[in-house]
Amino acid sequence: MEKVIKVFHYFSYIKYPILIIGIYYFYKPFFSENSNLLENYNYGLILLGLGMGLDSLKDYGKLTWLDKKVYHKPKIAKYYFSVLGLVILSIIISGIIGYFSTEQNALKELSIGFIIFGIGTIGILKAGIQVTKDFMETEK
Image (cartoon, one colour):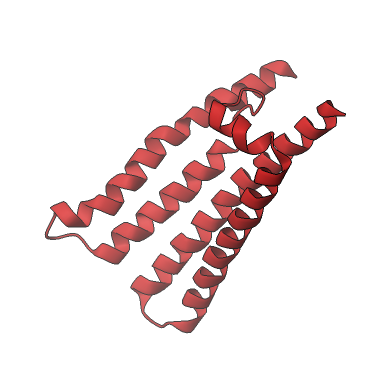
């Protein structure tokens, strides 16, 4: 089982090039005159959502110092998860409302990007809750 966890952990490193490409699409309209702003932001949101989803594959047994400060303190973790949950919910709801309330293809595509970004971020929320739960069980 440990080998499978390691494979997923190493597979999660694919997120870094995907996140860099996603950030590239956010800055591309500023440096190129022929690029479409909404189309590039859509690509950026989709790639950031994919990168966030891949982040949930990492081994959360190896935490950074910042992760430990958040996940190992129940009051801070509860506040963090509440805020993150509300942000994710608002991103997904705004994407759904945008998708069904407009007839413009560019805005529909951007709304799909928001939905994918929100769904990808759910993985981080779930993994963080799992780490906090595991820590709380080991403390007892």
